[in-house]
Amino acid sequence: MITAEKITHTTCPYCGVGCQIDMHVKDGLIYRVDGRWDNKVNHGNLCVKGRFGYDYVHAPDRLRHPLLRTRAKSKNGQKPGFTPVTWDKALDLVANRLRHIRDKHGPDSIAFLVSAKCSNEENYLLQKLARAVIGTNNVDHCARL
Image 1: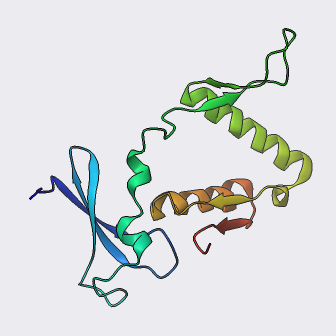
Image 2 (image 1 turned 90 degrees about the vertical axis):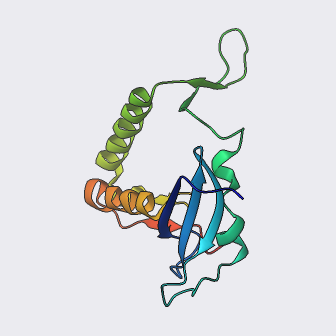
C-alpha cells in the first residue's frame, strides 16, 4: 500500500457544491483523492469528477512553459506556430495587452473564464484580478458544464 508523503485538505474545484477532499501526494504525484467525512457538505462522498478527475495534472502533453503565437504567414511562406518564451515575457505581453484593451474599450470589454482545472485559490485570485485590477465583474466558471 502506498503511503502519502503529503495530504492536502482542499475544496473540490469541479462545481459550486463545496465538497471537501484530501489529495494524497507521493513523489510529487497525486495518486488518490478522498472525500472528507468531517463536514456537512459531502460526508465523505464524491462524484466521479471529484474522485477521479485529477489525472490531467500529470499528463505528459500538458504545457510546461508559455508559448507565444508567431505572426501569420512569414515571407518564406511558413504557417503560424508557437515559440516558447519566458514567463516574464509572456506575463508582460498579456499585462500590456489587457491594459491597452481596457484603456481603449473600457473594463467591461474584457471577460475572464476561470477553470475547474485550477484550484479554488487560483480561481479566487483570477476573479480578484478581474475585479480589482481590470475593473470588470465579467467572470464566469466552466464547472457547470
